[in-house]
Amino acid sequence: MSTNSPIGFIGLGVMGEPMCRNLARQSGRTVIAYDQVAAPLERLAPDRVRAASGIRELARQCGIVFMALPSGAHVEAVCSGADGLLASVAKGTLVVDLGTSPVDLTRDLATRFAAVGARYADAPIARTRQAAEEGTLSIMVGADEATFAELKPLLETMATDVTLCGGTGAGQVVKIMNNMVLVETVVALSEAIAIARRAGVDGKVLFETLTKGSADSFALRNHGMKAILPDVFPERAFSTDYARKDLSYALALAGQVGVAAAGAETADTLLKKAADGGYSRLYWPVVSRVIDAQER
Picture 1 (cartoon, rainbow, N blue to C red):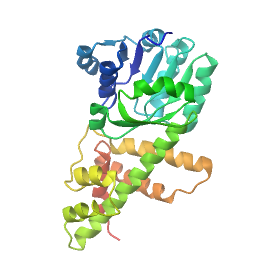
Picture 2: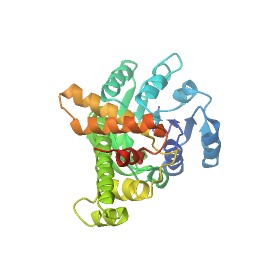
Picture 3: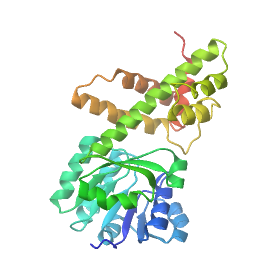
């Protein structure tokens, strides 16, 4: 298909909807979108995003197809099956996973798409829902250099930082490690504030002072100051279940390459306690409540 062919976008959730909107507004290309829920498609209509009736219809019209889906299992479901992308895309189509998926699945899908004459790249996103709305995400790409050059202008409609991390799967490796480090950092912040409060130091004083020293971080300023400190963990944000899903990818990858990731295992244990304690659908820094309640 030509470089001016429509762009497909599958998955219009919390992150996918604003990303699709920015793509439509800034790319100058026709965008055709699909989601099982009608509401985001209706909200995107004023931005001239056309709704597809299904994956097959979308795939047959689009030279590039983005997926912004909750998990690797969802990616596999969209790609496979009689009406999935593998059965529907034209030769030369580029399929791009914007979500966080297992590395082995990513590389397997790249092989399967190559077998039908299509291409596959991983471009998982990082940062917050606000960043998705503002087009200031960070995107980590796994692709060859020619594919990256083709993708970069489109990704820059959604992100301020677009990094080529290596070949297929490298974007997922970097994103999974990003999330692993973030989760472990939030666990450390949760432990720090619990200890400080019991030792008689105000949590706000602690976190504000940490921002002035070597413990400063994105996690402190966002997850710590905006969620842990005020004890606010809404639904319709990145949930405990989603955090556990991403951490499971990190632990699986660690096992595959022979690294004992004790910190990640501890974090997963605490997230499981949060999920089992009724917090599975709440914003995942709610793990701080579990840590605060623990006694030695």
